[in-house]
Image (tube, rainbow, N blue to C red):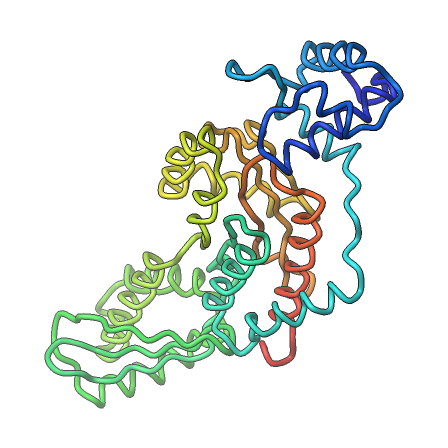
Length: 353
């Protein structure tokens, strides 16, 4: 049933019931609803409207209670047409930006910035914060340096995207002299500095598959080292960062606790959640998925609210929150929007380039 087919009275009662359920987490009975709505109608009329809304799929009755709770369809109608999200006033926006800016220091490496954004989202919204790590194929190598360690170990220092420094140790098949590593450093920087990491990986593989007789000793050593570095960086990449899962446990009702294990398993599996986040990356603006709208069972009873973050015009990823379907949408949606803008600003600032 379309929202336009609901009577004004039904709209008011549905909105009032959902707001009460979000606040208390309990089924709402007709007497409570009548008091909250303030309509000049009888309790019998309220019961009839509630029954009608239930028949149309917007409400459901838990077995243990005479009251009713919203369904995913009810929440969808509420979010799309009934929600009155109050714009964050200027003072609140300024305070939020100060708090976020302190945590989202543009001098931080990108991954640390993403971790900070996820933790801040969780702290501010009291839900689980979720931020995707910028796709690796958008990252560029600025420079690399190879330094000898004892035995068959080499320290690799990489600068990525002008400001992110990664240190890692690789184990080689033979010892490399200081001179070999100095030459390898020069060759890699000459050939690959400014290239995207995914492009470098492909090029290294292609050159290693070329006729080895046409590659001199130093170039072969360089390719062997580069192959280990960029293969390893590929396997260590995080897809997304989740913070504040424990907040979901602390605020969960007994019914929600039963579903949490499935949600946490979805965090571990990653595949379903990554598919959802990929859909969000391709869309612009705030995206809201309620319960089964996400497309997999792990999010039944939970909602996901996301917004893209950018470097200039380029969308790097998405951030958002995961929480019960009865979350305070009027508060959470503006916070997700502002956080995405602040993270974009941090990533687009002159200091970040």
